[in-house]
Length: 213
Image 1 (tube, rainbow, N blue to C red):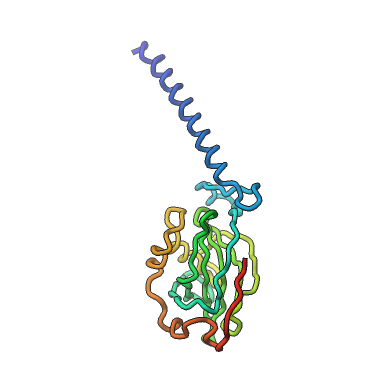
Image 2: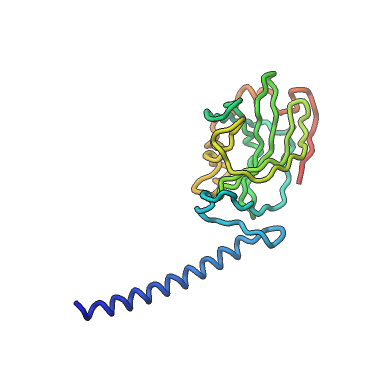
């Protein structure tokens, strides 16, 4: 038995060195792949430890164009029972997109008002770190996107008019964005009442909307 102990120790040391080398290579490759898409400095950190950090890293973002608010017409209902204020919201299925480089999900959400009209927000979501940010806002009376440009914030289940938590479940899987087809399927059937208006602009007969970058 004593003769086997040195041999076992030797094998353990060799295995440790091999694992360390492979881990180093994988880390270098991951870090190289996660460099910022625009400025080359920031990194998009893919790590489960992000969920335990007080301040999460801001995802790297590619340029994008927001869809015209007035043309969005395929709205599906979503619900967050833990929200304050509203618990019912709608999300535009025809606004869904996933960045080919940054892998961020972008979408438009409608927040109902007491007069039957809506406020709208165009947002981005990072499935990896569980964060979202708002880029633009609009409403039924003026269906044209206006800049909002909020910072990235951790998705919260509870809060005033919060809807991102159920959206995360519908749009993300295992910290990665789902395919657009699967997102639409997860969101379910479109809202008959909202789609009867065809588009946000139809509430007031408005025409067109600007897009943003």
